[in-house]
Length: 208
Image: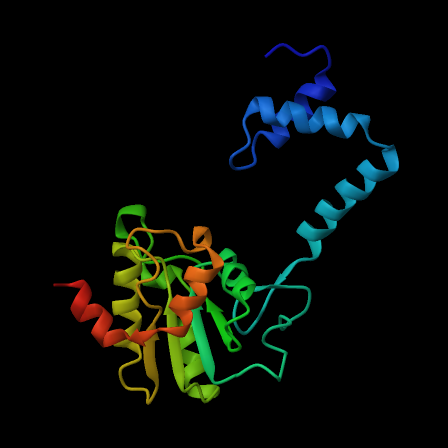
């Protein structure tokens, strides 16, 4: 791709670093920005810069937040004793979009995947166990992707929590095995949350 301007070329190169954005799409986005008022482009760049500099992670659940506690954790009308464990922040957004869950979350920041070099010590598992001691959690719902890595993570964490008097469930198999949670439609995801099953039943049936 030949550019007549190094400024244009540099801008396209930066946009092309985004996931799912190729050089052609990056060029289209940059050309769109060139057509906009300079004040709109300034607002755009300032919003991105401010987001990157000021964004925080909730000290309790590791969700993205503007303050020390995210607006979900700080909402006292939610069921603080009902905890949904997810892989990443996109999964929180997906479940919240169903409007079927009124508890709180814990974001692991990934799942156990030895082939990718991800072990339990690299995830937010210790802080999850600490919440069991401090928050009076009565039920944990595992809402992890239905694949080998997700199952391994559920098995490992459930073993870590075996001495706590807490009900452990997982979302029902409305989510296909091997499917990505964030791509599930809202009705399927809502049904999976509502029809969750005890995790011991899930592990036994999954190993048959």
